[in-house]
Image (cartoon, rainbow over all chains, first blue to last red; front, side):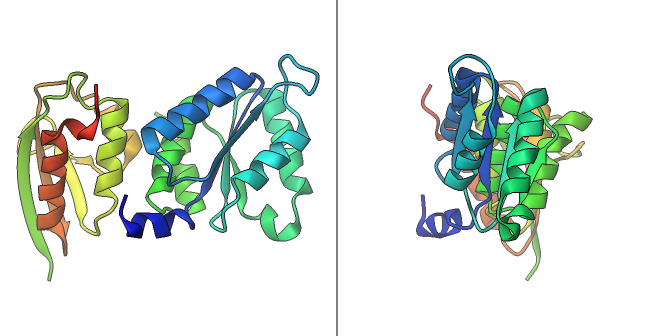
Length: 138
Length: 95
């Protein structure tokens, strides 16, 4: 990686992956890391606090914090609760961060790779979301 | 100064322009200012936006295909040369 890319990475949109299954979330994050590289802030969460399938707001908030970027954070979710808990997490964010987090309407694995690729090029949060959601329109 | 450039290269990578090669190609294309497109059928198109990961991956271009690049903009020449080199080097991926 050139120094230009390293500098850009600081400003790249971050990606958060939220799945009911920690294995799915971790696996999707692995795909982003291996395919897209290390220029994108990335975090994942999944699973109920007591084990088993589920999502929870605290873990999503921690993941947003971990992947935080001044350019914003795009969240990829799988089903039902992953989306509603992510919405709740976004509402709980400090006001100045809330407007810079979006939940993408895209399949979680494919969307994460597409969003990550777009983010790695230094694109805006809106461009990152549109690229992830372009999949849905196909 | 705005220029145009073209170049072509045959894909030798085993699985063609699938997931990882598509990501590599798109990432590289996006480092240039120029508009960059490729055609997997003929030098006359139809053209795919090389900066769109969804369209590049959606092209499902197999091994053995000759990719025709065209670019238009300030860094068109450098961009086409870099993209052709990336494909020649099997997308710099180890199998």
